[in-house]
Each structure stands twice: as structure tokens, then as C-alpha cells.
Image 1 (cartoon, rainbow, N blue to C red):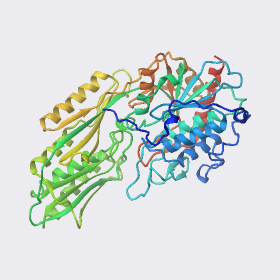
Image 2 (image 1 turned 30 degrees about the vertical axis):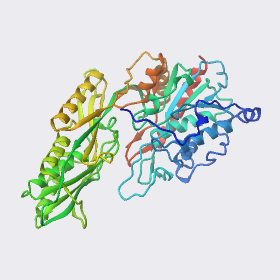
Image 3 (image 1 turned 90 degrees about the vertical axis):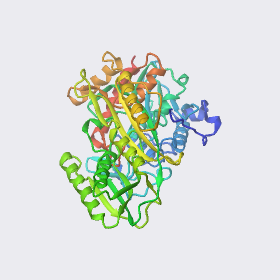
Image 4 (image 1 turned 180 degrees about the vertical axis):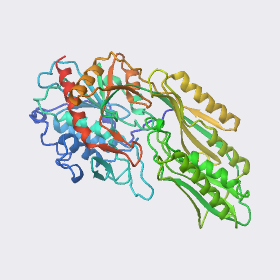
Length: 537
């Protein structure tokens, strides 16, 4: 079951409507420089954190996107801003029923008669904040900070994934008439981060291009030519509650401080999973003189993020608090030794609370829940025998919490990825079998398509050549163990020649997300030079 993106807030007349451009607007769209004055709906100057950075047009547009709320399934405001911007530039646009927006820019600088090229980025972002950071992603702007050679946010995800790519599309929209460009179809997709829903439901009739530049890669100096497919698994486990034992006190055990990160791109690093770590602590605490009853487990909230934090509420026999504390501390020490200098901020906090849950899980229910979390596949399952270093199949234990839609049930989400559909389904079959053994149900959505590498691709060769000429270094052609929209878009547009590249972004999907400043300008340069070559086609 794929999540469906409902744009109830969007006026109905926006769907499938092309804006006609009056002569005055067409005249206003005649530019002569990449550093043109921005349309009034967008920032005209960069904020202090971005001041002086090049290319100015890209960073300025990134600042505008950062000022707009754009959580997945909440992209209405940023899409309206982009439409207003297109109107002021005199550019036509179309929007489909789910919100995907295409802005059409005529060719320029000699590229007027070239075949059109699709340039694509998604506008939504992952919404994660550090504990204690108050930030409403549906209302508040992202606070940008320059940290030496990097741009990051103040305690939240930055949204450089894929805000830098979207900002590059906007900078292309405002490029001057002297810039050699083929006709462009700038595609801004929605709801990528929660299941590629926008790409799935795209009305491809809006697009005519046979070549696509996807701007959603995160390692400068490499070119992405393929990606994994994937699907989600939702396990629902019925549980029974009962009164806590007499003479027991409420406590909370929390795992925090982990790196987290993208469940595809970062999975090969074997980063700590807060849910798995908490289960180890709970197992140890339960055996500490049989003194702990589990009341609730809560951790993770994004299917595509490695959970950084997880907590459990519990009741402990009065007088046994110290025994539980020692058991949890011992597990924490063991994990710190296992992860060495990698998860350096790992913390396990055991604390007594004033008010706990009213009930606890029955012993049988607690055992089933902990067993489910222990036995679900987690991390790298297999690496490729063909592409050295490529993770081929993985599963991410993503989240656990009481199901808000089904009282008396726990909802556990796991995300499976693989380069091969059969391998992906084999893992999901194991998840189904485990759920059945524990008396749980499982809901498994339709897998999204992967993207098979094609080293003979023309656009791959163009980008590779431009990047090598600019950097003087050999460029790595790579496939990602992550779901790019390329796979889905390629399945909807037969014969689409695709490539993906971008600047260096680390810590995506976590508050550690940051973009390396010095990689943004060369990324922009390669984009322009590639489009210049395509303008001569």
C-alpha cells in the first residue's frame, strides 16, 4: 500500500492547467545574465549564512526554499511560490492531480531548436530535529548556519536533500537569454521522502523529454547511473495490557545520541540502530532479578531513516532501580566497545519518572514485541558480487510505536531495499513468516522500481566528461543502494536516458545533514556545461 498524497489544499483549477503568458510577461522573461534580479516572490539577496557564496543565483534560491515549509505531503506553499516565480518570469507551467509541477523554459543561446531536456528534483524534505529543539516543520523556516566549509541547519535537517537540486532548477529558470540551454522541462516532484509517491503518480503526459538530469545525488566527483528498488513492511502486533505489579515505580530507559542517517546510503556503515540497542537494554534489565515490566516502546518515525533515538516506559519493583540501572549501563558499555570511535555520542539513560503509563504489557505480549524487534532483519543483508562495495540487499528496522489507529496493537515499520526484485521479495517473505509466527499481521506495499545501470548512456557520458575535465580526476560511475525517482520515472517514460549527480551532502535525513560549500559551484558548472552540449544536439 503506497501512501497517497492528497492535495486538498490546492485549488482544483491548478491541476493540469498550463498558464498562458501575456506579452508583457513574455517581455519580462527576456534576461541577459545568470545574476539577474530575482522575481519578487523570491529572495533578492542571500541571508548572512549564504552571503558571498557562488553561484549566487543557486544559493539565493536555496534560501527562498529554506524559508518555505516543505514537509512531505505538505508542499503546497513552496509549490505556489514556484508557480508565482514562473508567472513572474513569463514561463508556462503545468501541475498534475497530486501536485507535481513542471515549468517549461524555452531554449536559449542557440539551443532554441534542440530536443527538450528534463531537469528534475523533489521539493519535499525529511523533517527531523534534535531532542529539545522546538521546530514546527509545517510553519517554521529552516535556520541556516555556515559552519566552516559547510552549510547546515540549527538542530534540524537542512533540506539540502533535495533543496540544492530544486534551487538549481530555479536558477536555470531565471537564466539569461545569452546562456546556451536546450528547451527545459523543470520537474518539481512531491512526496519523494515517504515513498516516491509523487513520481509514482506523475502524469507523464506533461513531459516530452527523452533525456533527464536528476539532481538528487549527494557525492560530488561521482556520477550515479543506477539505484535500488524498495518497499515497506508494516507489521501490526496485537498486545494485551494489565495492571503493573504492586509496589513498583515508573521508569524510562532511553537510547539517544546516535548518528542515524539515510537507511539506504548510510546502511553500509553499520550505524547503530536505536531500536535494536534498546531491545538489548530491555532484555538485560528484565533479567536483573526479574524486576522490570515493559509498558511501552517508542522509536523512529521515518521509514527511510536509521532511528537515532528510542525509549521505553517501564515499571520496576521498588528497591530494584539500581539493579536495572547497572544492567542498562553494562549494555551501554558493551555497545560503546562494539562501535568504538564510530557512535561516539551514544547514551543510555535510565531515570525514574513521576508519572508512568497506567498499564504494562502482559509478559507474553512484551516477549512477542521484543522478539519481533530482535528477529526482524536489520542492516546489510548482502553485498554485490558484481559492483565492489555496493550493498545489494538490506532491511532497516525503522520505527516502533503503539498504533494510533488500532488500540491494543503495536505498529512496526521496516524498509527493504535491493537491486533485485527477487532478493527483495525473499526478505519480505521472511518478515511475513516471522509476523505469522508471532500472531501479527503484515502489510507490504508494491515495490518501487530500481534503475538498471547503462554505461553506454549518452547523458552519463556527457556528465562524466564534463566532470573529469573540470576536476582533472577520474569520475566514479556508481549505483546507489537507495531509491531515486529515476527508477520510477524511467518506468513511466519509455526510453528515457537518465543520469544523476549533485554536490556533497552528508548526514541526509538527520539533523547532522550538511552540504559542502566548495562542491556546489562545480556541480552548477557541470550542469550548465552539460546542458550547453545538449543545446547543440
